[in-house]
Image (tube, rainbow, N blue to C red; front, side, top):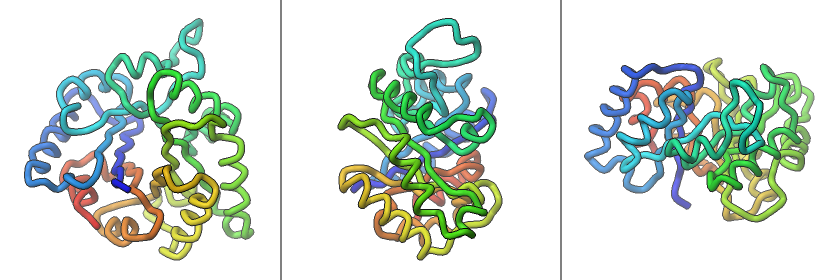
Length: 237
């Protein structure tokens, strides 16, 4: 299965930040990404411009979408709007959305279905807290999130496993823990779904993580903002 290396820029980036994408593209001329797909999910303000300039080399995606196609939802962006701006993917259910905006599994499922409605591939995020892992509940928590968050119909889908306690902390689970969780998710979703690992992925650990069975790529946060770091991750494994 072709790996997907996705960068989530979160609430970072202005027009000048597109220069980092240009540097990334220059770095890819050596064929570093010939065997994998590249995706960057910038803030909505940059999506159309990034797609216009770089969609022949990388995929572009959104970081969230509303479940409705249109309507009186001030400040929200629909999946159809993202597709119209040039997106191919959209992240739904990221732990920061679940925590900061109180999104629950049913909300994530509705957004994933909206993504499919608009022709986008949803990247559904799941992951446990540090307390839940410490209590031995990681598999149960992720299993419940999968049951409540995934669309019931067949279609394009990506799962991103991001242990909440590892996001932006510099901490990562052991390679054995990652392998266990990805194997668990694989048993639930089948062989045709790409499963990404996310949570403090960086140049120094990307090779080992991407070599794990059933890890079909990475969802990268801060390290995707700098072309040299992201290129190192893209080239790993």
